[in-house]
Image 1 (cartoon, rainbow, N blue to C red):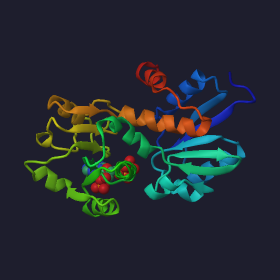
Image 2: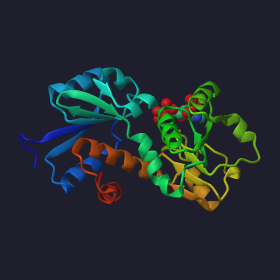
Image 3: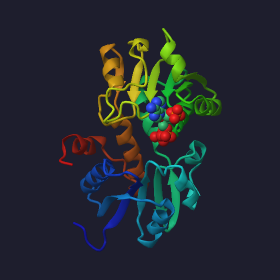
Image 4: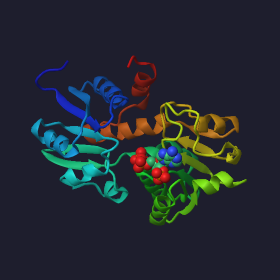
Length: 271
Ligand code: ATR
């Protein structure tokens, strides 16, 4: 029940109406009987929003597009991993000291861990903020990276940072063969409403690949549908989303939450 002792948590982003973060965090607060509520705020100025965390004693916040990078200038402290990635998706209010973390990189690795990452050839499609977090997680776990990106300059910069090879999207579209153990799409290509688009030609998919998409709307992107038809193991975007949320919840409450309950709330809830 909400009362004068209820702690507030929230997400800052723009747009924010599609966000599933309130569903998972409120489900966990309920499950673990924590007197807290989580709300979504569409904000236009990240600096004002962060200042308001101190004013209203907001205990923690998620940060999403387009503020994951700009929020870094507004915080009192930034964790080492987030600093190296160059993006923050979680703020912890520790006695009015606002500390930034990144839970995306570990979330990307979590569903891949049991297949093994060390010395595997991992191909990341994209070179934006999400790609940086995923690349960092893969490198930390000893994977060998290949970056595919539309913009050559951005792709090469990311590749240089992570000791990776780079292939442009143009080139990949002309190729007849390509090999990787793990393929990860970090671009928005294939996301609703553009569900007929795929970031990677299906003729280059083969059944030895594990194919992961960080898009969760739709869950079965064209890339994943084509990969499944080829016999690949596929990992949908809900997996990474749930794990980044679980890691946030743990930073805020010290509790490692069960993924299942909140995932059910997303898949079968009325929202
Ligand atoms: P995020 O923080 O979510 O990763 P971003 O930083 O804007 O978002 O990065 C988006 C990524 O998707 C980029 O790699 C972008 O390619 P460019 O570097 O060439 O811009 C890629 N992307 C987005 N729309 C694309 C499209 N229509 N075709 C190819 N790549 C696209």
